[in-house]
Length: 124
Image 1 (cartoon, rainbow, N blue to C red):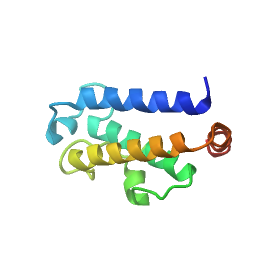
Image 2 (cartoon, rainbow, N blue to C red; image 1 turned 120 degrees about the horizontal axis):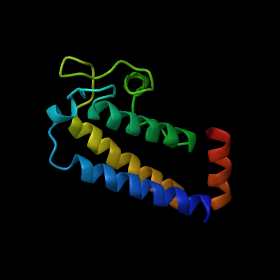
Image 3 (tube, rainbow, N blue to C red; image 1 turned 60 degrees about the vertical axis):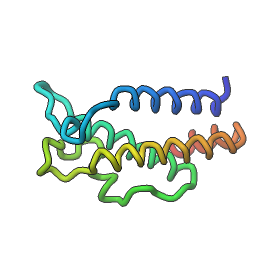
Image 4 (spheres, rainbow, N blue to C red; image 1 turned 90 degrees about the vertical axis):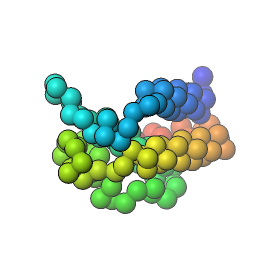
């Protein structure tokens, strides 16, 4: 299978799983700290969106988030443990997840397979 088809399949699969798992949850639900070592759902979703944003940047697209917003959800960033922690609201995270999904799919679907393979190898 080509890089492009694999990447598109994974983007769609990951997006669908996220949307299913987030269905019915409130913003406050996503801020709950787990009773074991781990991050809140807000942090996990933000981490995914931040890294999709990094993929867009690597593919030559403008950044969706500011550096401060990306940094808030980077690996080893401060945990998001409640309303007092700096974080992005669930509504915006979902909207930005959707935007990154559309932009990534559009970019990858329109690019030549060899271009995507080359950019992925060079950028990641």
